[in-house]
Image (cartoon, rainbow, N blue to C red; front, side, top):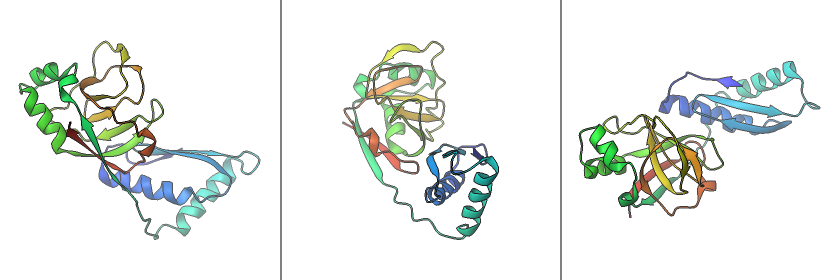
Length: 192
């Protein structure tokens, strides 16, 4: 596991992307899983032991440290029905805003994909405008419908399948291209 500075920031995301791209070329690696501020590297035990993978990673990174990694980040626009947001009014009330103001603030921001996890296709998008950043529900729901657009603290996301969850649902989408998300991509929610 490689660790970076433990904050959600564009600078850290850039470093994670560069290291991730560089290590994908390393022979004997089974999987590389990037996150907000870390990268998990799964490697073939018949190819490396713990010390040899450390040396291989160090060599790969030092060889490519000055290389500029071309990022092919894309902008994905997500049509969203905010009238189907189970928690939209509660989020608005929590922040002393109208539902319309919450929608406006949510759609004005272009979010970055910082991590993919929790379930297949669940992209953690940040940063939500602090005026609508809302804590998770104190009691998670047993079932959140697929396509629910939600906020938890300074993040937003779309549930890619029916699931239990504790995020505040502010809208719904029919978007189904969850396999399109990669770290560093940009996402913008647009009113449907």
